[in-house]
Image (cartoon, rainbow, N blue to C red):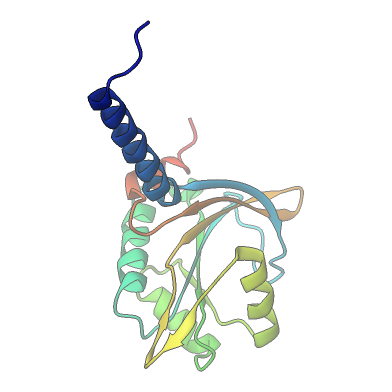
Amino acid sequence: MQPLNKHQKLTLGLTLWALLAGFVILIPQLPQSVDKKIDLPFIPATESGKALIFFGFSACHGVCPTTLSGLSRTLNEIDPSQRPTVYFIDIDENSSQKLASRYAKQFHPNFQGFHPSLLQMKRLKSNFGLNFSVVNTGINHRGRTYLLERRDGNWWLVKVYNPETYSLDTLAEEFIET
């Protein structure tokens, strides 16, 4: 085997850098499989044994209404016996339980809204690795959707979906039993 010439080394180097950059950019965008027990005493067991959780706020004009509308369309495509319960968790500390419930229901009658206390929010931040901040009149947040599964009386976080990349069709397949 002959040693690589200057042009081949450059091409190989650029190819390796492009592959590395692709991995660095794409890997965080893929749904992340997880298997972590989550303490959620305010979420009861559901018939399907699965739940979707979305953290947002009712005054959001971006990812929140877009994601919740998409989840509503997806839910309508799933057999009612296989549908997960969708929980909208309002992260705005100035909100209320009533506002969180009303906001969730405007997207789908089966969506559940929840406004956590400060102590519950602290636990949720820790359990889900949430990172958000107040910016002017809004809240800067990631807009991820979390898939939970009920096993042996406990909720387990099994998958995290990034808002920019997950497909609603793929999400619907999670709930269709074969």
